[in-house]
Length: 305
Image (cartoon, rainbow, N blue to C red; front, side):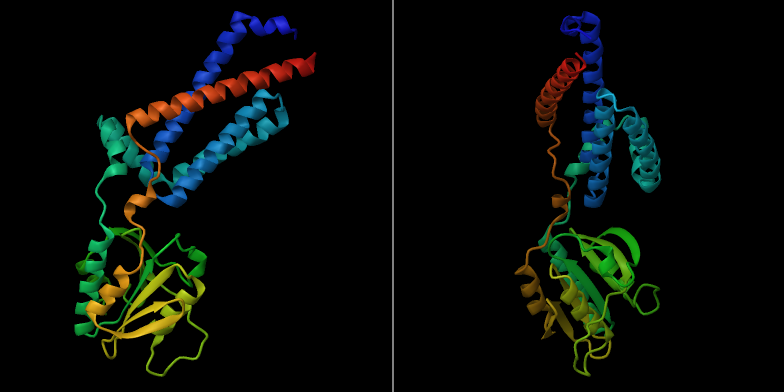
C-alpha cells in the first residue's frame, strides 16, 4: 500500500464510518453504565467494553487469530451477561418499548434514603426488638462492599429500603431468615439470613453466638460494624474491629452510628447523566478515538511499505 492511498476518498469514507460505528457503541455502553447502579455490575460492564475494544484493535491491526479468539470471547461474554443481568435487561426493554426513555436516566437520580434516616430506622427497629427480647444481628458497611467470601454463607439476596417494619419482620422467630444476619449496604438491605464467621477469641459466657459472629465479622472486615440484640437479655451491643461495646441504650447506639460514615445510595453511580455532560464527554472521547485510529492506520501503512 502506498502513502498516496491514504488520501483515497473511499478509504477516508470507510474509516469515517468505522469511527462513527465505534463512537455509537461507546455511547450505548456509557448509557448502560449510567442506568446500571450496582458497583459490581459496573465493573463487569466496563470489563466487557474493554474486551470489545481489544477485539476491534486486533481486527484493525490484522491479528487474525487473536481477533477470532477475542471475538468468540465477546460473544460468550454477551450471552453470559444477558443471563446474569436478565432482570435489568427486561426492565430496560420494557421501558424502551413503552417509550419511557427519559425515565431510564431518571433511575440514576431517583431519591435514595439519607444515611440519617436509615440510622433512625435501624435504631427504632433495634429498640423494639430489644424490648421484646428478639435476637437480631445487623451488619452495616462503612466502606467498600464486603466480599461474599468473607461470609460463611452469603444468605438470600434482597434489594429493599431499610425500614423498622422490615427489620422486625425478618428477625421474628418463626421466619426462615431470623437466625442469620441482615446486610445493609449503601442505605439498602441487600441480603438476609447471612451466616457470619465466629470469632476464635475467648469470650464471656454471657455472650451468645450472635455476639461471637459480630466479633468475628468485624475482626475479618474492618470497614463494617455489627449491631447485636441479645435474645436472652434484650441487651444491645455494637461490634467494631473485633471489640464489643455493650450494653447500650438505643440513644447511645444512635449516637455511635451517627459518629461513623456510611456510604449512601448516591455513591453507587458516579457518571454524570446530564445531556450536556454526555455531549461533552462523547465529543472529547470521540475525537481522541478517531485520532488514534488514523495514527494506527498510518503506522501500519508505513510498516507494510
